[in-house]
Image 1 (cartoon, rainbow, N blue to C red):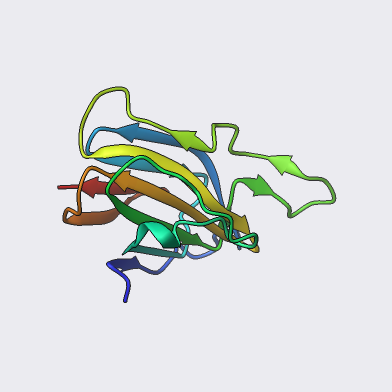
Image 2 (image 1 turned 30 degrees about the horizontal axis):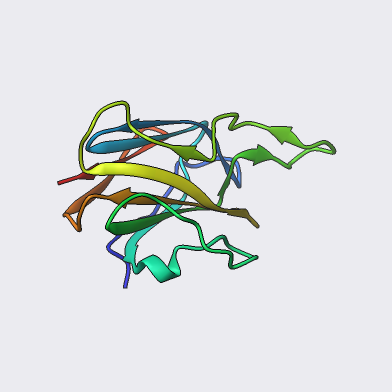
Length: 141
């Protein structure tokens, strides 16, 4: 069962929300999109289930608790035209600049309009997922 789920979208939104950037802070991660994804799912998973979508290869992430967040439909690349346009140009792995509950995050999926990131935390904590315009904010603690 999902820890958090948010649905709904603005009328006339493009079919796939495009991720532009991510800000990792000690107790908060902000995913910045061009348009808001219609659906957001967040849940804790065991370390053994932190894996790349498709290949199933394990993804090592610093932390003791692992929150996986999926944005649907969403991507880091624009595939709507005849050419591939990379929109998210940031790293596949991020760490906050200072210490806090958020230890590290890594992309685990960007396939068939399912964009997923895992957030490694120092321990299992309450999580709040909220929208702020097109942005999605994951607050920890």
